[in-house]
Length: 331
Image: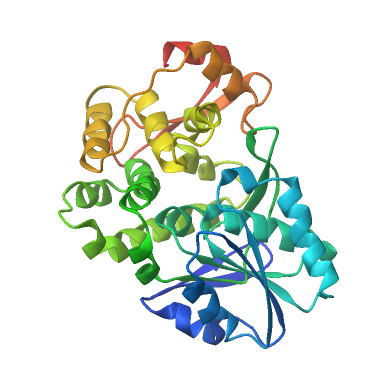
C-alpha cells in the first residue's frame, strides 16, 4: 500500500509493504551520496540491505537511546556530512526508531539549508508516530524536542517485517501511539486493538490505519496550529513523566500514563484495561509539583497555559486551554 502525503513544499509517498526494505532504490533516489544515520541497536543486515542499493553510501552510527538526541550527536552528523563532501544534491537516510529519524531529519533540514531526507522507521513507535508529519528535533537540557524544525521527508518505507527483531516491550510501548490515535479519531480501531490475541498477526493493519489517521490530521494542519494538536493526547503529562524518569520508562509507556492522567470514568477504565492487556504501566507515583514544573518547560506550554487534549468518549476529543497550575487537580 502507498499513502501519498501532501506537505507544504512537496508531496511524498509512505510505502507500507512487507519486504520493502530490499526495494529501497525503487522508492528512494539513491544514485548519489547517501548518509545512512542509524543507532547502535539496529541489526547490521538492515543497514547492509540499504547500503548495497546506494551509489555511494556512508554510515553514521550513534549510541542508541534518548540521551544521544543532543547537540553533540547532531553536530557529529553535520561534521560527517561536511567531511565527506556532501552537497545539496545528496541525501540523508534514517534507519531506526524515532531518535534516528529526528536526528537525521534535523541534520538534513539544516545542512546547506536543507538536503533530501528519507526515513525508514524500524519500530512500531516510529512507524505510526514520526514517519509522517515532518517533525524533526533534538532535546536540550532534558527538555524533549525543544530545538527542531518541520522538515518533511522525500519518502518513507514501512516494512513491518523488521519488527520481528524488536523486544515485546518495545512493540507494546509503540502500540500506545496507535491506541492514542484510536481514542481521538477511531473507536473501531480501539476495539480492534483491544481484541487482538496475536498482536503481530495484525500489526500491519494497525500500523496502516494509524498512518491513515495521521496523514489526514497532518494534511489539515502541518505545523500544529489547530487540529494536529490532537496527536499530543497523553503527551503533555507523558513528556513530563518521561523527563522525570530519565530513561526508566519508554516513550510510549509514558504517553500511556499521560492518557490515564487526563481522562475520567469509563474512558479511563478502558485505557487502563488495554494498558494492562499489553503489560504497560497504568499508574505512577510522582510528586505533582515536580510534574507541573516539568510541564511548564514543555515546548507546547505558552504564557502559563497549555492546550490539553481530552477524550470524553472514545473516537472523539476536545481541546481545552487551561492554566498549567490548574493541572494539579488532574494529577
